[in-house]
Amino acid sequence: MNESEKKAFFERTLVLARKGWGNTHPNPMVGALIIEDGKIVAEGYHSQAGSPHAEVEAMKSLGRTPKDMASIFVSLEPCSTTGRTPPCVQGILNAGIKRVYIGATDPNPAHAGRGIDILRDAGVHVEMANEEFQTRATRLNLIFNHNITTGNALVAIKLAESVNGMLAEVKGQPSRITEAEARTDMMNWRRLFPAICVGSGTVLADNPTLTARLPKETFCPVRLVLDASLSTLEESVFPRNLYTDEYISQTKVLTTALGIKNETAVKKAEELGIALIEVGHDDHGRIELAELPGVLKQLNLNAVYCEGGASMAQSLLGEDLVDYLFRYQSPKLLSGPDALPGPDLDTLTVRKPITAKLGEDRLTHGFL
Image (cartoon, rainbow, N blue to C red; front, side, top):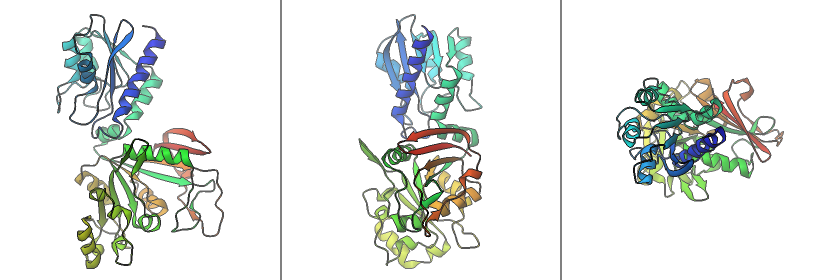
């Protein structure tokens, strides 16, 4: 097998892994394929937590014992411990496969390299992908990697700004900053994250649905609204989309003691079937953002995509709660007197940044 063939097979494992995009939490996305006589004879990917892993799916797809000289390519090191499913390392050994090609090592410090060692100790030839591919295969599972190495949910913020750092033409009114390609890209990221979070100002100004609207599906993550006083549920406010659409069960409002005392709003929430979660407040009566990680853990959410605008972003950054940044930049200039400035993102150090050109817009995303 030459290097060109190996590269093509590794690339195919990532294509397969991405088929689990947004569906495998809290597990990683993984793709696998079996090679015989230089050709792909079976493929598999991990589709959702609790379902068979990619290696097992590939073997199931093959439907027979692999040939003596068969190889398996997998985007992530095969698991070596028993969880909801048996360890894939043992499945590979039981199948008699003697060549294993791995895209990236297990990020779990307790397991990293263990599967590789078990295979090699059993006489299996194990080969890692090149460094560039390992980096990409690892980055695919940025949420899982953060969870497994820190024990915490990953908190990401998304901001779309004009060339001069403005988030809206007029504060409190929706503005189209980016164009079609960038907005499509945002939808794909919404599809990855199990939860999305906005503040009450965004709900009042934009009346969003916060769904991922894709060509083949509309997906709704858990929708978290930060509303200290339950202003979005006031009688004077026309019912927002988040509180009346078909995904209403996915909406949860974080509020404070002040909001809970708002009997009219609480009653309205009960009538609509909106879940309220009481958290603490700061000296100004605002949501105590430091409690957000605890709420995510309580709700069994391993990541959240925050789209709350300038105020929320600045507060999350100020509390040092942001793990990952999505920064969309438009060439548009918003220079009106009522334009809303965003946080000064140029002062942030983005680690392992990735940039993408999306039409006339640009995305930079990476760890903080």
